[in-house]
Length: 203
Ligand SMILES: Cc1ncc(COP(=O)(O)OP(=O)(O)O)c(N)n1
Ligand SMILES: Cc1nc(C(=O)O)sc1CCOP(=O)(O)O
Ligand SMILES: [Mg+2]
Image (cartoon, rainbow, N blue to C red):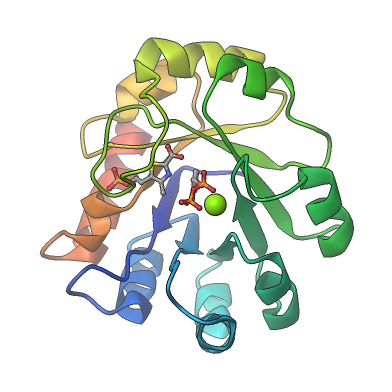
């Protein structure tokens, strides 16, 4: 199963990344992605090693952003790469089977060209977001629906998403939603994750 609630951590939040991950897991996230452009490979590796048993105990997948070799050496459950982060086929070959490969998709033509070996796509941004200043132009809900119709794998929507969006995202064909600020900037990240999950289930 892929989705529904996918939490991406943010080192700029006041909450430490390890606590963001733990809260998301307790709140019922399907997956947690460790996204930290500044952390060294060694720091990221240590974080993955520390979190993996805790995530496994709650059946939450621990995914590493960008760093394929860290994901492999630390035994993470998968890696998420963008269009500029390397060839997904090569990443799948490095990872072998049994771990997740996620790929960002920003356009319809990219959705049509998702290669075999990719397990899900992160489609967006649905809306503009300050969390990723270098994001592609927003696709909106209609663009998301086009991507979902064309993609050969399940679609996780991302970008500017919050509580209350589940129904529209489902309608557009997404199997889940990925959030950063909706959880990492919440007063109670665990409760925020749980609310997103409830909203998704009720939508
Ligand atoms: C679930 C999910 N979807 C999309 C992204 C964006 O990945 P990318 O385009 O490689 O950008 P960075 O996150 O690396 O800045 C993602 N991380 N997760
Ligand atoms: C990490 C990331 N990737 C995006 C993409 O469109 O590929 S948008 C994004 C950040 C999403 O943050 P928030 O939930 O705070 O809007
Ligand atoms: Mg990337």
